Image 1 (cartoon, rainbow, N blue to C red):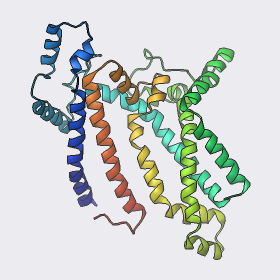
Image 2 (image 1 turned 180 degrees about the horizontal axis):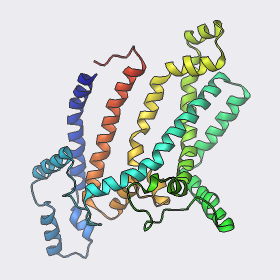
Image 3 (image 1 turned 90 degrees about the vertical axis):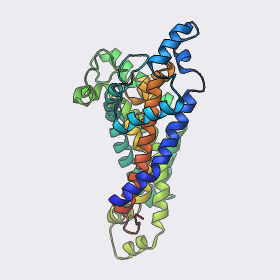
Image 4 (image 1 turned 180 degrees about the vertical axis):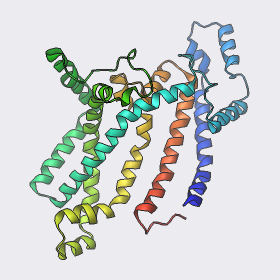
Length: 326
């Protein structure tokens, strides 16, 4: 297995290098310094800023320097233009809030959606299946912005106005959020993360439920299901032992596609709830033309998705003996 992981990692190195190359080239189509300083900046200001960040060096020198920083995880020398903070510190500060929201979201969504998919598949065409799929389609048809606005108003703002002792907050108070473990404290998590998690789960359930139902419906036509039923296995055993085990490949695929977002965060949720996660940090950097942050975060996102793909193949082999790592 380790040989396979090493080979896949080596195969994906050129892919990652190409992604970084394209990103760096795209960010330099227009002068990033001029874009950040604005049209009122003098030529002297632009020149000093360009020299201070090494953007006057040849492109291949900048490319090599950035790759060295990625390999050594040395981002402390790269400073944000907007906040004048090391980008490495910004990464470490923004990952915990994203995990605090997206980790429970992924776990809860997958658990509920798989169970609902199993129930729908075993009651295909019957009332429970029709009701569950109707609710799933309705959930998919409504924009996530609608859920966020309604969730903030009815889930936090209105109850707090009426009672004053409501646990959910509309948004995180940036001055109060201190320390990387702030969002993992139970009281803080309930106040600032539970409502975003609930909204995220509602949004994702419609898509995941329909996907898992399609997977489970296909599995119900397999010979092993008919054999298990003929042997007198109970419905719960057929569903949660036989069928669930054999449907692990598409389940793993679906979960692993979402796994990088546990770290990168949900941009809309983090922006509207003022959660200082990876997604919100990147959006703020884009709005302020914060070139070093955009470049570093994009490279990190690419590395996460490549690592997720490699881990997916490894989990395939662990879940299904018929899959060989070669």
